[in-house]
Length: 118
Image 1: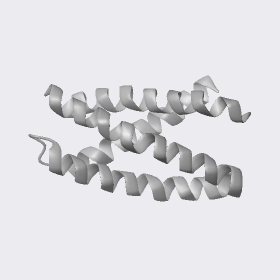
Image 2 (image 1 turned 135 degrees about the vertical axis):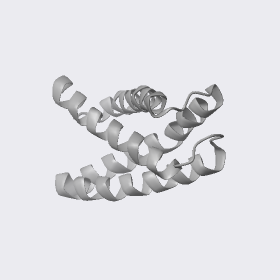
Image 3 (image 1 turned 90 degrees about the horizontal axis):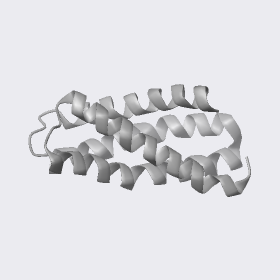
Image 4 (image 1 turned 45 degrees about the horizontal axis):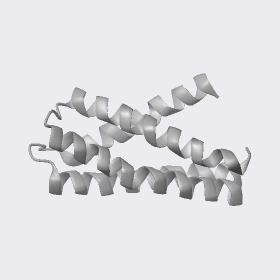
C-alpha cells in the first residue's frame, strides 16, 4: 500500500464508522439529535487515533502485531467511549453496553465491507 493512500483510507474508515455507528445508535434507541451528535464527535475523536496507531503498528510489527494491537485498542476504545457516553448522553442507561454494541457492530460490518471492497 502506497503511503499516499493513507489519508483516503483514514477518511474511508472515519466516514464508514460514523455512518455505521450512527445507524446502529438509532437502532439502539439513541434518537435525540444532541445524543447522535455526541456519537459522531466521539468517533471523530477516537477513530483517527485508532487507525493511525494501527497503521504505525502494522508497518513496524506486521500483521500479527497489528491484530494484537487492534484487539487491545478496541477494548480501550469501548471503555473510553462508554465513559464519554455515561458523562454526556442524556437518556442512556447502559452507556458501556451501547459502546460495545456500536464498536462491535462497526468493527464486524467494517470487516465485511473490506472483504467486499478490497
